[in-house]
Image (cartoon, rainbow, N blue to C red; front, side, top):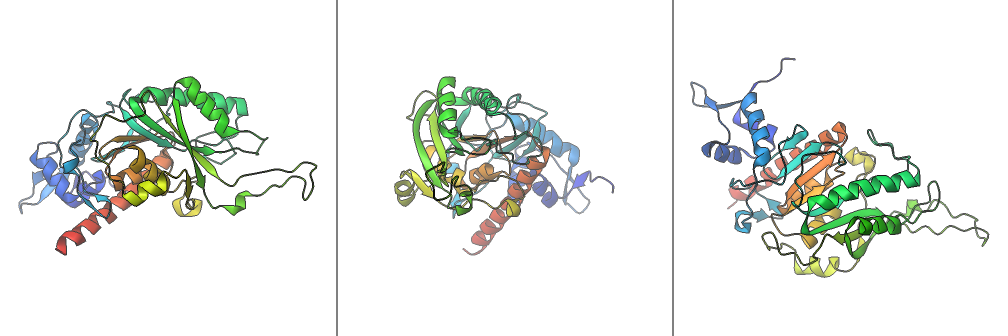
Length: 355
């Protein structure tokens, strides 16, 4: 099949993951160019689209919160005032639209993120419990796993601002391959790296199937106690009080009251539905983002996986950067974002037409 080199306005917008109205604004401002057919219809060359994607890595969406318009938490694309972005020119770029970046890269080696540029990190790293990832060995020894953890935590510490926060979703403990207090061990490493500890949120995933081992049944000989929960360790770099950013919060009174209670109860995500061996639900990053960042802040997920964190960024009007070592997972995340962008635009178009 011959590769497509010329796109209609609708096709170009879909390729970039933005709305048709946004691509018109971009063209008006000289960010992307088109030609016109004899009938006056716009045509965008693939060369010009790719040129925009490369140049746009140095652009930034507006920090003025009045630019963000919401309808049922759906955020319109930015109004196209661009400044310096917390990413750098890189051949690791896999996908980009106005607010979101996906990089197919190793978080230990990536050169795509500027230091001291991230407001909030939300992530769930590999747990080292023999999950069959495409591009990551999830069967390290525990010492190797902790060494790997230290390496990527050092990178993340460099990426975030002095008043940046870090929401780290990890198991409380694990018993596969031996009993280990993962939460305590990883929190200790994070503090050694330089992070300061704030609190721990207990995520009651309501997954009863995790109780798969009792040890000596009905006997005191060697019982196992396994808590069917995970945790979200809340860390920060230097200052807990956030002074940078738009200072505009979008959290409701009920959400604030409910979420500042450190026990969260909601279901996990279906591996089969999402198509990833260890997805986490969008609800988890959504809560972290609304509680710990301002509208327009920049959020990073160094282990993007199926893209849940960027979906939450799309929903809440934050700029999102996702990094994943596996190209197939980058594609999965991109497809989820494109689907959600189309759904969001349809909702906005319907809402606008109903006035």
